[in-house]
Length: 235
Image 1 (cartoon, rainbow, N blue to C red):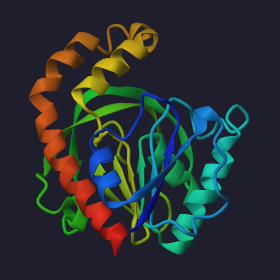
Image 2: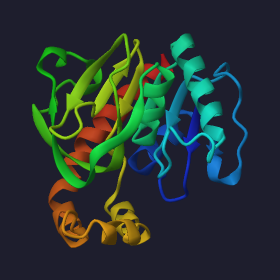
Image 3: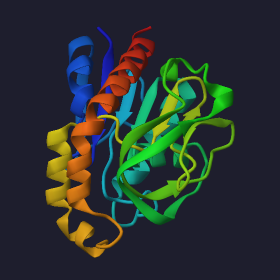
Image 4: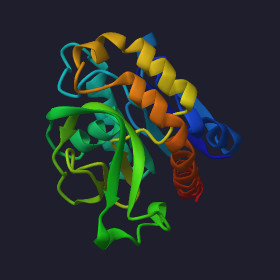
């Protein structure tokens, strides 16, 4: 049976809709950095690497020493061509491991936003059949440059690098395809102070009202993408 390594940074940013298909088809080892987990130095022995989100910045290695260990592991996965999926912070870590700069964006994207598939890469297997534009759930303020020898798959007006592909099998996804409606409610509650500081820019009540109309479409695309990624990792 294939084996997957999952990195989690905070308790409330879990796998969401990824959890069931992953645990059904893979032996999963979780490394919870908020509990002081010690990562292996290399990816050998694993068939997939999944790196979840978190509130820390890739540039905060002094405050979060585990970041350098994550970067080393992602570099190992890239070198070994092990299928890798980075979500939000995970996408930023992937970009950094591939040689790009990660930094604070001009603004924050929190809530439901439209993203657009780049026309020239519609043939990418993970995004086959996706509409040209679709709504996704965002919660980030950091962004990154496009790494060398990578390709942008999905973009938005405010943050161009919404999805990147590095090498043959590593994907960085800036938005949250994994979230459930329950997770969104929890994030709004947990991050109340952040949202209060953004009053006038971000409306938490609007986010919650927009969720029922958008979550089903996100899940439909997210489940298709995850199934394709896991199939690639099983090969």
